[in-house]
Image (cartoon, rainbow, N blue to C red):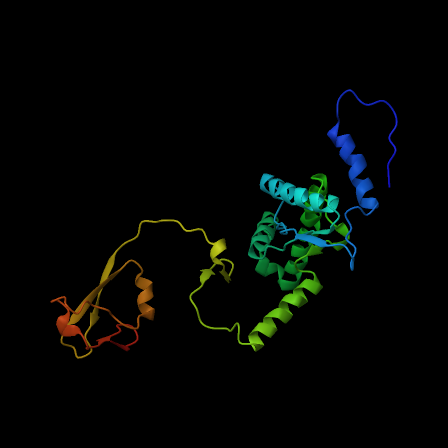
Length: 261
């Protein structure tokens, strides 16, 4: 389909006016829509979904431009192209942002209750998820907007649950006790990517473990005194004259009385 343009060409190009006119025209005529099934060779890009924690930034603009160039090139070469758009719930990051907004209103998440808090999260998604989509359209993204998805949509959530159940039944994943990054404020585990590591000045603490037979003690130094509660053994160099006589003996934990080798 061809759009006929008449009239004098403006002396200066007005990008805002052109974008307001042409982008909706492209979308309305289905130029970005993918047909399935099709006899043409498929070419698909799944847009890494932006987090609904705010607005797009310059990094998104760069990344989306690269993808748009690739998808438009494939479309011009005759491929059946699909650029699948979406937004991501962002997990803890979105929760933190919503909690920050609640505090501005003098409300704490635990006071609000789970159901009401989830409603506020969805309201946040509707507000900023919509803004993000409009930003992507303003960039000229040639996505198939009929297939717009959100990572917490029921279909996608169910697919994740089914996949996890299958992997569990196949023995590929299991639940176990592991050291995790625990946030005392959010009362939840955090992934490594959500943790910022900083160096702080600490204190080297030396304490004594009494030998189980009462004949003496051994000194242990640590910067994390609280970890002694989980101690299960003491390692010494067998060739160190100071400790050679202690190899094979046990000490008694000063708090719970456990014997530790």
